[in-house]
Every structure is written in structure tokens, then in C-alpha cells.
Image (cartoon, rainbow, N blue to C red):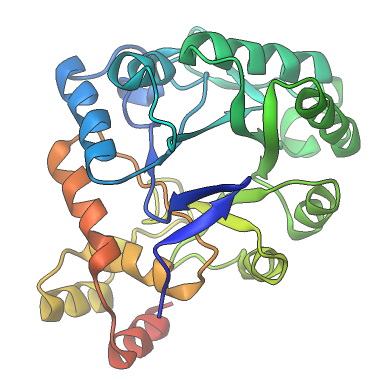
Amino acid sequence: MTTDSFSLAGHSVRRMGFGAMQLPGTGVMGPPRDHDEAIAVLRRAVELGINHIDTAQFYGPDVANELIREALHPYADDLVLVSKIGARRDADGGWLPAQQPGHLKDQVAQNLRTLGVDRLPVVNLRVMPREEIGDADYCPLEDQLAAMHELVSGGMLEAFGVSNVSTEQARSALEAGAVCVQNAYNLLHRDDESTLHLCANRGVAYVPFFPLGSAFPGMPKVTESEVVQQVAGRLGATAAQVGLAWLLHHSDDILLIPGTSSLQHLEENAAAASITLSDTDIAELEGAA
């Protein structure tokens, strides 16, 4: 029996949340394809009971945060906005590192400005591997975690989490006080099972990104799985709904943040929270993995 809510930094949030990454334009850059629909999606998400929205200043940049503010400010008391720092964008839309303590503090300030708040419940630190960013931009994880502590003690954040981390990095972050871990994970891509178990054992939220896969190499799309499609057909659901429902069933500490810029897809994603998977369904889906 799955639960429909979980505690995130002391806030009770619905396990079906919303990710704002798809609201900006192509490549997560510039204005949305349809401004009015983007606003409608955010407002409908809240109407559906979603009270956990994941965003980042570098989605746009600024675009996702500004849409959230336009659509939802002043924010409901139970709405938990979670942002992400540790990267920046160049003029061509490239994703560049911004890992130094000064960068992290500046990014939090930018998030507060664009969202129109004085404090955020949680901000995730997106960690970038040294081999990916090079020695010049590298900053040890312990220095980044110390900066996150300063942001909490200074009142800009209630708590912090980490994203894109190994299991060992997640363990270090949890020991330093992180309240959530956000990593790539889904039914067909379960390389991070050890981190999920670590979070579950400690009662910490695990937030999978790419919950249905992605176009990146090595990340299969859940909706293209024949087994997932067969289970969906039997249940009268979509393959995406089955993939999301499996995640909710798999561990009670999983919080979902599927993103979309479509009202129809938002409605479908939200409905996944009410899908019940039988033991037979689960066994078949586990076999697909």
C-alpha cells in the first residue's frame, strides 16, 4: 500500500509533484512555446493538489521561475518550491559549471529574486564530476556542502538537497544534513538502486529525474517498452502513467516531478497517482527491467 504524501524538509508534499524544466522554449532556453498554456499548466497543477514544484534559475534562464511567479504568486502556504544550483547557461544554451561557493550563493540570490521570495524550502546542489568540468572549475564536495550550510544558517534556505551524485557522495551529503537526493532513475534505468535504498533507510526523499527516460544515449524510454505498453493496455492507462505508477509503488520515499508544457499531459501524469498495480502487473514490470 503506497502513501500519497511524504515529508520534505518538514513540509508534507504530495508524492506526485511537477517539474518546470519543460516550460521554457526548445533546449530549455528562452520563452515558452505557448505562454498562456504554460501559465495554465502551473495553475492547473495546483488545482490538482500538486504542492511540490521543482525548478531552477538556469531553466530559461529565469524563464521557468518567472512563469511560476506570474502564475502562482502570492504562493499558497502549503506550496513547496524547490530549486537547483550548481550550473549556468551560456548564450548558446550550453550547460556550464558554477560550483564555487560564491557561485552557489549568487545563484540562490537569483532564485529568490526571480521567484519573489525571501527564503526557499529546499535548494538542490547539482554536483558535476571533476572529469566532466576540468580542474579549473572543480570544487570539492565538502566545500560546496559547507556553502549550502551557510545558506541555511543565513536564512536563505530552510534546507538543501543534492542532485546528480554517486551513492558515496549522497552518503556524505546526507551526513552533512541533506534532506533529498535527485538522480536519474526509472523502471528501465535502475543503476542508482543503492542510492535509493540509502535514502529509504534514512527516511529521506528520493526524487528521480528522467522518470520516463530521455533522448540521451543509454537511457531507454519507458513508454517504448512492450511490457509497459501491455500492462497499460490491460489497465486502460497510458504507458507513461504505468511508468510513473511503478515508481510510486517501488518505494514510499520516491517523490515524482514529471514535467510538461501540455495541459493534457499534466492531467495524465497527475492521474498516475491513482493507478493501482496488481502483483501480476508489478512482476511483469520488474521483468522488463
